[in-house]
Length: 432
Ligand SMILES: [Zn+2]
Image (cartoon, rainbow, N blue to C red; front, side):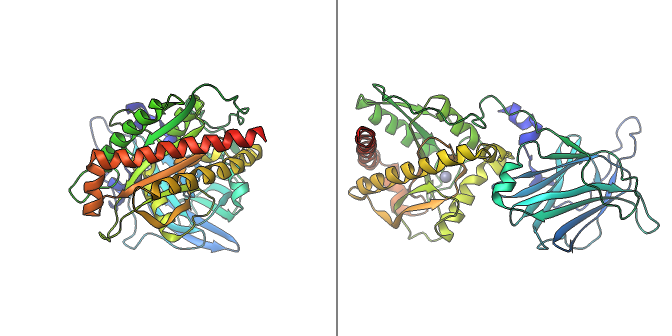
């Protein structure tokens, strides 16, 4: 896992830890270091339809700026800088900006993350030399764009600005250099075209994805049990049951208590040519009386606020560990892939309803038991995918039930039937 923590393009390391520090002292270790650049102000304002960010700094400093999706963000990377900001709140909720965060990203790299409220394009990024009023400045203009255009521009969207504009203060310059995004790790599902339909083999491959793991424990139950453990136990039992039918082979996205990036989970399923992806989770919420299981599939828009909030929570796994979710989006840059995904979404919905039908006979399911939300882990463009929330660990009874092997056996027998039903449907449809 360590290499992920070092892999620059994919990570926003433990920003949180450094966020609250208004200023970080310049280190003075050993030989005198070249004086570090210090950021002395950060401002945001509206310029016509553009949202403009201005960073005031003590020296001319090259920077990279790029966008990320899910959630939409703009990231500005600088060499390690110091912070000596005015004693006022950080800019927020202006134009496209909802929140601004900053801090040390890794040794040698400082990062500013702009959480933005919709898809945006980097309209301009440039540096200005000092004027009589102010020091060196970095200026970044963001303009609203469509989601489609945003996703199309995801690859190679890093803008590198190395020197200030010759035009001096006020000059606006479209980025002069576009550098390609870092190559994606081989596991990445990213830009491979949709696979050809598989011929039905003797044993269909099902990917079972135990949610969370390692540094990411997931939800915490009423008795203190961590979701990641429940998910793993469940996944192992599901594997056993599915394979006992002789019709399926199961590949697990993790077999131990280890952190796996969401996009790598998808990649594992794809590499194994899985025909169905089932992500296993359990939720916890404030209201301890809520219980029941539910099945989620992907949609562009979450079907309700709760579903959206849950997706946000589950997707945070990667954000917590500081992962660039770009891959998820790079994957859908290609319109062909998007089309494949639409088809896949229909298949996912078919399996979800089959699953709910089967589970309903064995356990309490939420009133709206099949819901839609933007889960990152469900974004394989060509593998029907669902996310099963086994229930609420925050509910004492449901947590106890989920800890019982007997209860789980009931659920997973139902799930096994649902998988069989689904493939029977698929096979019949392909014969028609
Ligand atoms: Zn979860």
